[in-house]
Length: 288
Image 1 (cartoon, rainbow, N blue to C red):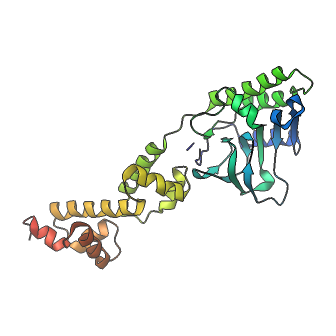
Image 2: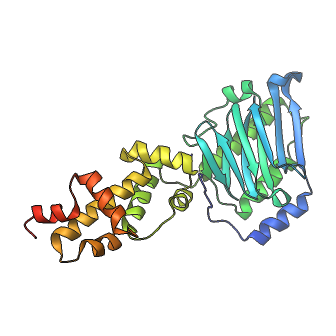
Image 3: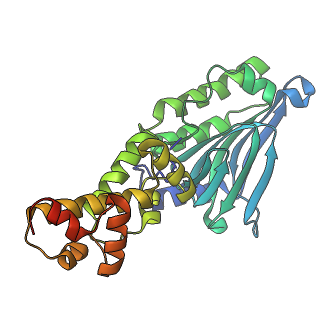
């Protein structure tokens, strides 16, 4: 789910979110064991980590939907690291995960947690992307607050489950369409090509793509067949070839125009990629 995927969807004003959270108090949660066993466990509510918590890591046996209202964190699963911001929606499936919290004092999340048995019985809880974005709106906050307030654990179990599944379905319907990982890599590649002469930060491009740098490199190589650094290098040499072929600029000027601070590195990488020096390349084209 490429939020993440550093996603920050359009939301209501932060001050209104703050006001909503302050009315909640610190934690507002409920739990019930349907059938009296852990196999029927449901937990839900609004929650923030205890003060002093910087990371939570381990194997989580239950399914959880986590919707971030305030704060920032990095969430790691088998697909890599994802940056979470207000409006990020996480479908945490059973397995090993890690949260690194960047600002505990402001953190607040809405959550629903289900036992594996209830998770497996649920009708298509998870969309294809497990990290998504849902804009924070007044009506959504009202719906979540009402859901918690009206979740009466004395109601029939079938009614409680129906309420939970309805909220999960509501989130799925509100997910903002986000570009696929491949689309984001193509956008990143275009950004690299458009700034060959600049000393751009590849980690900043990965963050703009909504991916950790490790995941970005992995996806970039999968999509383009090469690493981000090698891609930039090859595109610089390709641009240099065009400039050498079509203009009267000296090799030193060409090196500068494609992002090299010194001509020696340019000559070395040009020859490594093309097999010949810039001067020999220009001469092979009949340009002296």
